[in-house]
Length: 75
Image (cartoon, helix red, strand yellow):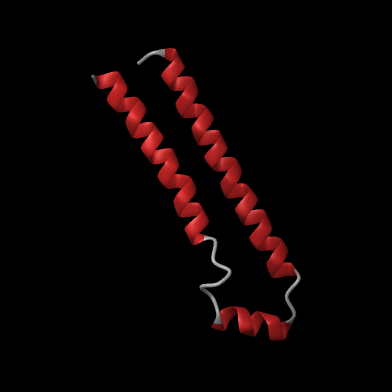
């Protein structure tokens, strides 16, 4: 595989890792600010503040780009 492909895959992986860490930091910050009443409401409405959709998008994009680069290398 050409070195440029390695650089692109590593860069995309670092961007995905950075995005994941930013989401985790944001979720931790929100959780620290919650009072006990807010925490109960948060548990009831768990889907609203979920980071799963954003993380799914980040890693879906990473996987697609990696597959495309591998496909380019093979053909």
